[in-house]
Image (tube, rainbow, N blue to C red; front, side, top):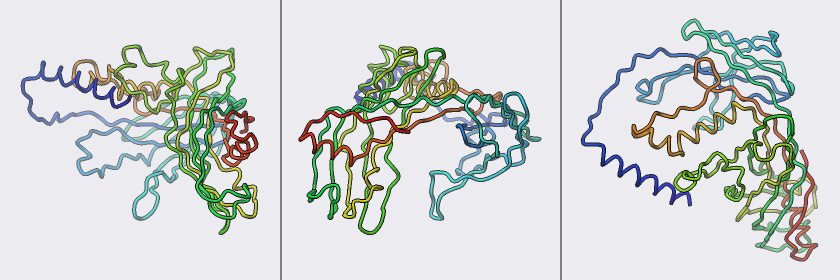
Length: 368
């Protein structure tokens, strides 16, 4: 479906381009813009504030991909509920990017105060060269996952599964299932959410026990809340794959089951000593209760990259679409969220499946 949408909008743009374009030539715009401070941070309860502070830059500066945009000589102040709390100190943080020397690190500013639910956060940064910037965020409270319903569970196995769960030899299980993630929205506020899906951290418990797996991209297509920002016209030609963000406009104050599908999940398991730790491995579903700035930023990224208005803006047939920013310089975004998690343990699913002799429907309690 995503490929068909891409083809449709590509053909539309090609036709428009041929109709309105006669010739072109390359040119260097030689933009004379002054760099400003750019602030990026995701703030969560019970953790100190970490701020990535950079400067804006023109693409012509980065011809060899070596431009350094980190700002390391700024004064960064943290205010909590209107009161000055502390100065953030220059520090480093590992990223998910790697090179031959190991994980890369980024410069950041970090505090020691651990924020709490309901805190109103203000961050002010001041640089002699790039000026001032500030941004605000309020820490949401967590919204818990009530329960998980498993539907249409299908399991096949490769290898000897006799004596399960105390498998003496390594066995591979293949899963297909639908999950209903039940949540309850608060009635008295305007709320926004995001759903993340992954696996438990890889675990090799000792030389004789192991539990690890692979997870094909989860399916969000069956959940209508994930496409509430998509118009009827855009639903036919735009791409919404991978977006799992939504508001409570349709479920305000109600309980609701989020629909997520999982296909071809693979689980490798060996546990001759019947240890408990390998049995806890499984799919981790995270529900983020996000602030409005987080929501607006993600929606603006979708509009720029996948919506009709963004595609038309790229070819000059509409105004350009820019990512939303709540920073005073319009560069970057400072957001907040609180998350809760539920684990769908593979071993528990296999046991229930075997006990029910192929009954594919189960209910698991929420856990956090």
